Image 1 (cartoon, rainbow, N blue to C red):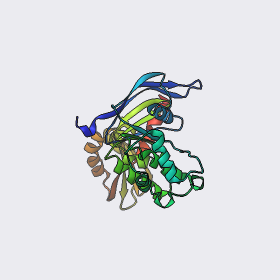
Image 2: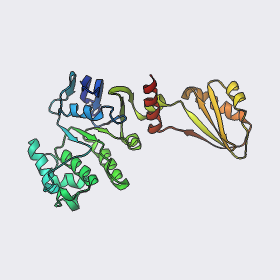
Image 3: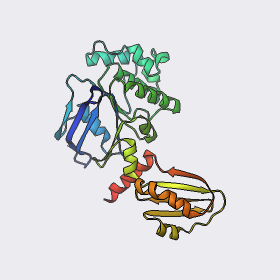
Image 4: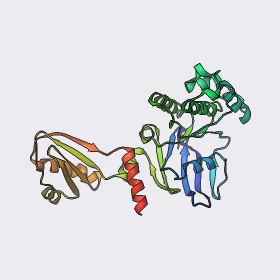
Length: 302
């Protein structure tokens, strides 16, 4: 294993339960250096509890969290809070003092990375929630941590702000391990090397985005016709193994296969059997939102 891919944080059967039934149970995964590890799940799944355990804001009931020797962890919560009379520069400088960090990333550089140079002297009381999120990331970055934990880093940002933070995370992953959560799964899809899905406090799926897409949904293709076409769905389903054909519009139909393997083998034969002029064949529903919804749905009925 190369130095760039070694685990810098590992959780082993970590459990923390609360009287109301919330918490996490038996969570195990590795977070690798110079990678983005995403933890996703519905509200109340246990993501913030997990992050609080990783950052030692609370202790687990059982299990272990192993951190690489001398690895510094910095944490930015989804709603960072600071003393309102402090300026942005003072907040970042105070972060360094409280953490006892010498060296690291200079306060002005951390603020610049997060797009806050022009407001570095402005009081925090005048900051929007999106600016507070940026400031929280700057305060974490100034510690130059080996492990940067970001809880919903873009939830309050506008599209330009999300693009800025996405670029920042992509740059910072070249230097450190980043662990993040986000409900904006399109962002996760672009950033994450590995995604862990939590539901009801348990880890239900792990893998790269492509691996999760394969787990979450059977593959389906939309076929668009050049002219109005009536598809004999029953005959096609009977003629081609493992396919379900649906037509809701005279100019198109959708075909779904049991697996990518059967789809790659049988789709050409199905297209030939349609005997219709075809304009376009498109793979549909292959995004992390769709796969996530299906995984949560399957978990609910299990």
